[in-house]
Image 1 (tube, rainbow, N blue to C red):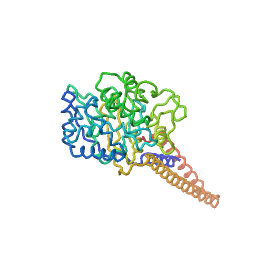
Image 2: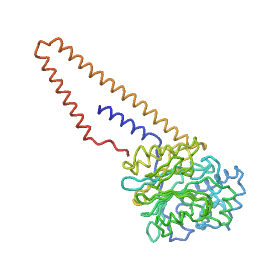
Image 3: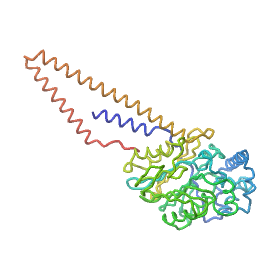
Image 4: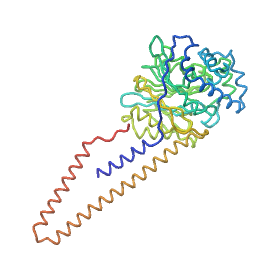
Length: 455
């Protein structure tokens, strides 16, 4: 019956929508690229001076406690990367040594292959997906074991980088960090960096301090300040030398989405995955996918059983479908995978400039734990709601059928008792006519009413 169908639809949609969502959007600051590097972050520093200093000091304490106190002596004034002058100005503004500010900005070099994503920087989940008319790109950004979740959430800001009076590119970062792991060059492409857990701490630090490669968060800014198109940037990020292994996720127009799995240099372990192209994901062949999901594993590798982020997101996207995917639907889907380590969720569609949107996570922070716990809890909640809803639907259906049978039974009894009278035939005809009209009304309503949209 139509009413049973509607009830089941409502239950499924409710199960899909339940779960943690983001909170407020961060404040927006303009970074003037025409100004001297030392002056670019003054407004941000003045607004967050105490918070930035506390954040820096917290990272130093955590790193030293982990036995990497030697790291700070490696990142000295001779360790130059683009935007070093911006970092020096921030250090002076908040009252710390340059090595502290620089070391915190490049803290990803202290992360190596550990076997658990709780030890990784920017260890979130991201997706690029084709909708009906646009390509959407959404991601969750998370803290690593050296960073305070509360501090990072309170320091989260959206930044617009201005050149010649116009927005050249934009992104979301942490006040005190000049690196950018999430950004969009308006009308060109979006970019996201996620950790690829390979290599050693010593290799990472050497690559940085000896100038073998630049931090990925620096490379993203260099790319967006250049003139490259989406295709040219895909080629560039596959060749530029990095200080750490990383996944660089790029998005542009409909059908233009790429994940570049990178090692330190352009030689050897570099793989490019393109949306819509045949690929094998976790051992399963996918001939032509309308989306790509990236966590912290090569797409050809199967994540450990304790990490269900990829499988949960794949299940959700398949349930929505490309034809029903919207900007909000993708953002809410990513937010179902938020964890106590999550800092923010950003969703963008590079050809729709105004759509860039960030929400700061509101989940209560806890001591780092496997990120799969939140997604497992979300799946369990959905199954419980679905099970309860289906039981209710079955009860409603049973009662409606019982009522229908009782009414027909009463009419049959009346027909038997009054078979020699004329009223029974009239009443039977009237009831039959009523049932037929009700059936016609239900069919007409079922054919004309549009199904509820997932938004």
